[in-house]
Image (cartoon, rainbow, N blue to C red; front, top):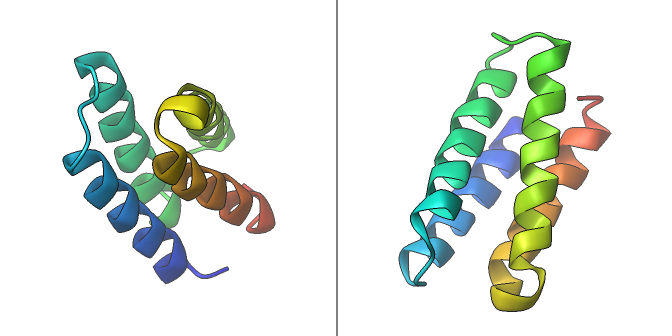
Amino acid sequence: MSNEKIRDLLAKLHGEIDTTEIDEETRSLIQKLDSDIHSLLNSTVGEADSNSAIDRAKLLETKFATSHPAAEHFIRGIVDALARMGV
């Protein structure tokens, strides 16, 4: 999956959360994930940082599983795409 597809999934995630009420902690996690992923796509982070991004994405996926299924779908797509890229 290309970097463009991951960016597209991020944009869809942001669109989804902009129309949904979420707590500030979750919103902060999403912002950090966005930053982490952009750094990964620009190859400016190391392995430890990439693991952190994956862990953060999985945490968000779990948080969204019941309350925000559309957002959870986008997060799962991001995790899968990053895994396919070898991150």
